Image 1 (cartoon, helix red, strand yellow):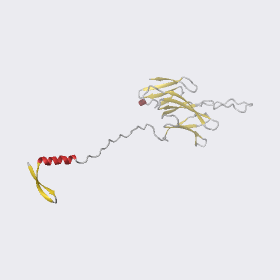
Image 2 (cartoon, rainbow, N blue to C red; image 1 turned 45 degrees about the vertical axis):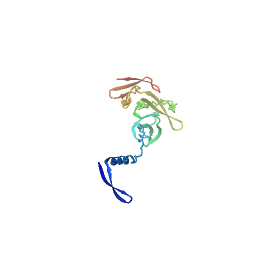
Image 3 (cartoon, one colour; image 1 turned 180 degrees about the vertical axis):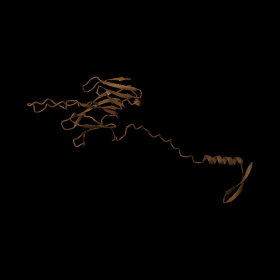
Image 4 (cartoon, one colour; image 1 turned 90 degrees about the vertical axis):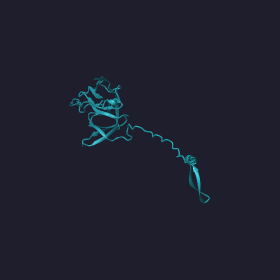
Length: 229
């Protein structure tokens, strides 16, 4: 079977007979000569990471706890943030004076309490001959109250501040593992309670387990015995 078609040759139209096979062959050649699209390499998947800690320190304060963590004569207040604490003193004019900041915990703070209880300072008896009372060496004494922190690193941290001659303070700390066998999902230490007589601590692990920690040693640094139920 052939078809008549017009072909423009040498400046004029000429009638030619073309078979079906010739038409199909020309179409296949035209398709093969079409430009192939440029090769595009597959897009590389971007590197994705999970941000677990903020780059900048959050200034938000979660707790404000009155705690005499230096000595009985100082009216101290502790401001506790996400991963830092600030020690301030309440002055007689009701203003707050910044004393020190501690931000080297290496972990977030889950909870905070005050361990210890205010104890009355008993002045030595005054006599006619003794006009000057005896003085206590505050640099060597443990303050009546100690700050207790639970960290996301599953640690129980006891803190107090020891005054230095230049007016600054040196932080003293004692760290005790809170619950090594607990899962991070249980958030051990998120809820913390202190015995009113400061003999033991209680922390909640998950939703069904409470861990009590009794003090073995009354001297700093402390040692504790844990019991879960």
